[in-house]
Image (cartoon, rainbow, N blue to C red; front, side, top):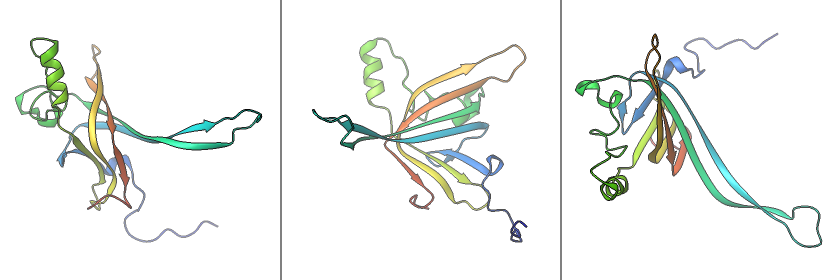
Length: 162
């Protein structure tokens, strides 16, 4: 017989309760997000041994992808252009040198996913940069955009500061 479910609101975190924010600003029309943390290990292989002697940690990587419905217009805020007020993706500029300068001057972002019911953080990504973005347009579909991020750190609910 399954255990009785406690009375009151469910503790199960679902997409319907997820709130996605960039720099503390709610990103409306977010449709999907996924992320990963990776520890890179290097195998220590030595002469006269068939097996790996040890795996040594040599790197840590965080990546994150978010999808959104694309809105158009000056009042779209975070739902609009990433090249605008957020300074998250570089404006192209007149030449290669200007593009390089604008890319180097991009701001770090903080991306947060939290439970809209409890306001508790599920994940907070720090020192975030946008690595790529892609979009899809079909004749009878909603225009969507996928944004790939890289981050220096990913803090889960036990580590993220409220």
